[in-house]
Amino acid sequence: MRRAAVQELAKNFKDNTDLFDIYHQCAINDPFKNSHKDYSPNPRRIALEIIIKQFPQYPQTLPLLRDRAENDPDEQVRQYAQNKLKQWEG
Image 1 (cartoon, helix red, strand yellow):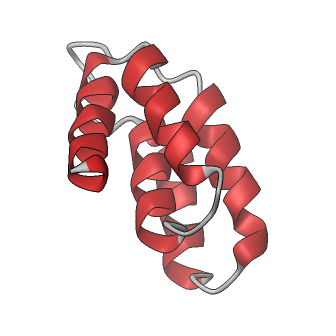
Image 2 (image 1 turned 180 degrees about the vertical axis):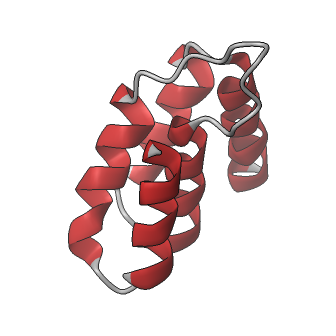
């Protein structure tokens, strides 16, 4: 449910820069825990993807990406963030 809400916000309000804080909070604080029964994407990763796509110039984006690459409790989110960091940092 949270994943869908974040995706709809990004889709329908692409130009609303006020949403950055919502995506940022989701990328850090969403309580999603992956279970073997649940194959839905992690809302933290979805929020991170949106931030990278829609807010790459924001000064908080790179520090957030570094933090998620090191500290996200979900290995898949950490791996995604690490891969994006490699692309950004060359």
